Length: 187
Image (cartoon, rainbow, N blue to C red; front, side):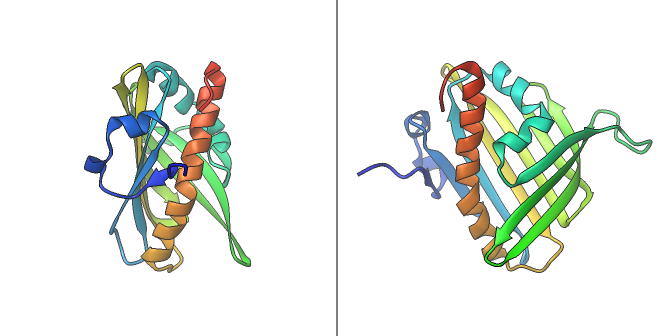
């Protein structure tokens, strides 16, 4: 019997050994009546510098997330915060017989080789925030990705959380595969 590819229990129950073996851990939390929040964690067998170099190539994010069809860095506006980048992303998602397209303009704040914060400027969400953190773990890197969002259309939080729980592990595996493929290490 094979191990599950992700788990949804509390972090404390997951030893680093399980992450090193490829597990992807998810933790959901209550957020809003119409939104969802989830944190995912995985190990990458790559040095943090190499991971950072690839993750900050924002147009490349379409390779990590299959629903993301556009990701581009924009020129700063006159009102832009000095130490932030601006990002425009478009994603599509099919639900049963319905296909939805969302777009976001994000302010991106970087702490070199440690953290990327994505904050909603405007778009198809009432609110959206994501934090990506990198930590050294042995000879590799522990990546933690936390996202919380409330869409403009009223969808009960349980449906948002379930969709994220279904998609995020596959997206994280794909991200690991793409990141590790560049270095010659397969993920």
